[in-house]
Image 1 (tube, rainbow, N blue to C red):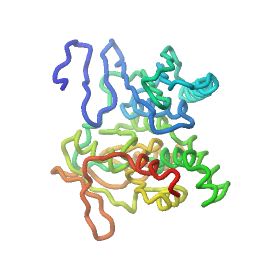
Image 2: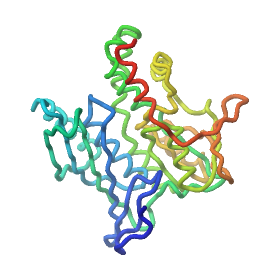
Image 3: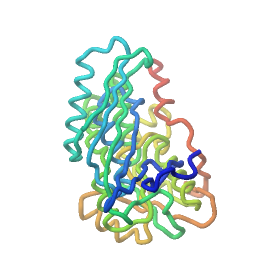
Length: 316
């Protein structure tokens, strides 16, 4: 749709798998991204800030500033909006970014709360990292655990059901995973180390993000399912709801490609970041996940498993 920029300052344009745009403003590049939060009713502000800043981190950019739009349905109480404002303030302080503006509106155009966060960052010229940079032979690293964000959201959404099934302690532990949603730290470390591509994992889960890396780079990939780390809490929740954790919204983990995966693993581990090599970029076009003796094709991502799970509310 957008083939050529009209202005010389615009150096990157939208495409599948690329979440940021970049502007050349002199010695640094200004990197901009925007994300809506529509799948969560709780901790919306915290998720919004972190997900937008995670996009910047995947481009190697340092978050600087945020702009926020809140669209609230008719009947929303002031206290609900103030709660989101408090979450936004805390989250922005944690990533060292300022909220510099935005818009808040109560409108009949929506039937549930919609939050959109635009994040503005900077990166030195020549240091911008794109999803399309992955090359054959690169190791594929996954930081942290798959489906952390989905675990948090579902623990709020099915709180009563999970307390009954798993107990109070399990639910509280699952909610606390919200503190593990940011990938800014590993993004900055990886950018300084030197990597070919980074992609924060959001809707569509790990499998969706892998497909997007392959699509953006024009190369295939092969990963091993057993090497993808998943928390026990996540496994139990997904088994209970009969959903696939590898297709569940997964902010809190990042996919990184680099020619020297072990070297980057060492740096990440030294900084207390869990990370694993889960596969490699390959020649050709096929995206394959190995599950035991089965070699399965990774297809274009469909609707996130979160929405499949939400339909079960009241049925369990």
